[in-house]
Amino acid sequence: MYFLAAEGGEHNPILPLWQEIVVGGIAFIVLCFVLMKFVFPRMEQTFQARVDAIEGGIKRAEAAQSEANQLLEQYRAQLAEARTDAAKIRDDARADAEGIRQDILAKAREEADRVIQAGKDQLAAERATIVRELRTEVGTIAVDLASKIVGESLADEARRKGTVDRFLDSLESTGAR
Image (cartoon, rainbow, N blue to C red):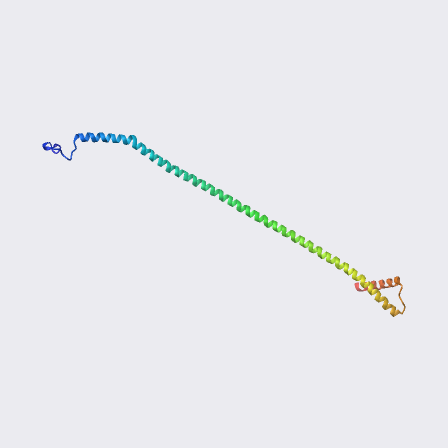
């Protein structure tokens, strides 16, 4: 304890005075009280607010991510549905186009058949007209020729017509064999 006591009443600079220890202790207690009463709760509130903000931000980010994933799935489902609808519409359009094509081809065939039949009918009518004209002409030539050969006039129209018709009928029956 030698070094605790100061020689000659001098103060030891290493050891503080007891009054300073008391004042320092009281100041430390007051400082701790102020910190615990005012500062630490405020720091705890700030810390809790930051924790809440961070956790809230994370929750909001997770919620936004979840919502974005749901929207993405909805978009993909709508896209798949749209593709399916587009394929159906395309197939329907192809079927309709094929139906229209078949209708047009059928109408074209009908029109072609009608034109061909009209042409055949016209040809048959023209053939009949030509055959009548040829019969008349051949009959006239035959009568003139027969008149020259026989030497008498075959002027009687009814006789001439009957003779010519019998002659042409015999030619047709000979040509048909």
